[in-house]
Length: 406
Image (cartoon, rainbow, N blue to C red):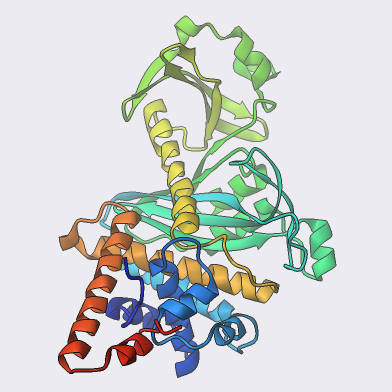
């Protein structure tokens, strides 16, 4: 299947022009090349493959310099990206929607022999269930109505690594609080919930969310204390006294859960709901999950249903890595790495924007959108060859135009 890109997608160009802050023509062409290349190139992504497959692309060394040395303001481009998304969502979310800001982190694994890439360190990987040589990135997704839009991203470096790099240390929770503080909720959202796993469900994060009128639904560790009937006890200890026959049956999207609901003081939170939830399997119960909600008005089914939205961020990581090459960079400097990550987020944002706004195409997933765009590239390729053949352009000249001459 041909992957040679002979023309830039017009809608992608328009999207990038909307977020551009004033790059010169050469810089903007590199921007389009990288974003479109990350969407279109099959298999393992590399700057070399992008340079080879995009007809209008400059040499790969130019793209490397674009990422590492060209004087463009990636911070401003990122702010423009966020502003564009905020404006679009403000004008396209239907009134009365419930919104979710999902926060988590992912690791971009690298070979342990990789030594010259800045910022690499040992981070715990949930997917590998072990500490791995990697970069760690904290991200957020905004979910409401038809949208599941990756929003913020920021690399996390351990304190020792920050000292080595000469940058200010921020914990993962600090980064997450910054995301909450910066987020502007579309006015049509009737309530926004911050969804987190147990790593982020901290007192300071909850306070930051509540200060903006957001509620938090997050997993908590069973070492937190509750006070049923005024008796202070760890959740892990309390679970030993729960009789299975006393649990409520809750069904969410075809899955059955046995749930114990507690309302009151949870750790440092004075008034919250805690669900101790056991997913029902054919051979018994899964290990319990403890879910805290600062919105005590929600029933147990709504809490479980809302918390399940957290899975969208795991899906976004899958698309970022498997389809957009988010973890496949081979550049060395922090500047290059973080610019590369920004371009991957731009690609994902465009795909989600395109998926939702092109209602006539009925795309259900980002994968559907990518496949559609790849087919459009094949059509362009065939049209290019057909047009030049009709003009009696010599075959070797066509090869040359398509960068197919060895």
